[in-house]
Amino acid sequence: MPAYYPVFLDVRGRRCVVIGGGALGEEKTDRLVDYGADAVVIAPVLTERLRGMADGGEITWVDRGYRQGDLEGAFIAIVADTSDSRVNEAVSAEAMERNVPLNVNDVTDLCTWIAPAVVRRGEVIVAASTGGASPALARKLREELAGTSRTGSRHGVMEYADLAPLLTDARRELLGKGIRVKPDHWQACLSDDLVDMVHEGRSEEARAALMERLMIGTECDCPDGLCERWEELDVSG
Image: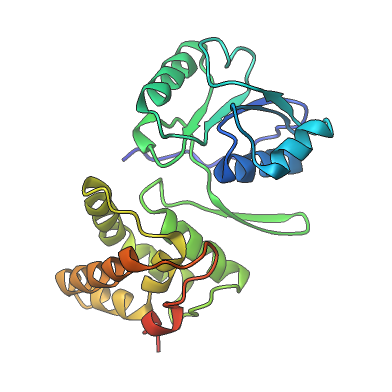
């Protein structure tokens, strides 16, 4: 896993390319626009919000899939739709050729930069990253810093960083088996008792407990943004 150099970029007026017009593409584009970027979205289909932004002139929409040459003049690029590995590889090759910093969502080995979890209050911005090891942990750190965590914690924010190896292994195992666990369910599973076990040298016990809880999430049929098993799995007390 590479050690990423932390930096804040001024993207105002700069061409920033997002490939993918789904929910994740919308999230990435929204943030770029918030910070003044000249956002270009390449996708045959857009979310309703992105289409409205395109119609309103807030973003540029290229109504098709990615083609070689789309990164010409790009300051940074993001692949938000990673459903086609051939496209991911092609974009990575072009980015390398043109020396364009690239983020490929959840495909760390193709990234030359990764997006941190961000907390902002006025002009103060705090960014937290796990080096791509665990999006769930990055979100946990962000929510603890912002005071919005639904499970709460009696541990200090950075004590949760000690879960990174455990979460990386669990995520790798699930991805290897083609198992998807919704982000909200991941959050419900990140509890104080796992931190306790790791700090006490009971890492295998922590891993077994985490995997058991995550597997419950494979049967979740909850809407995005709300996991009905929050209370059931909240063992932070």
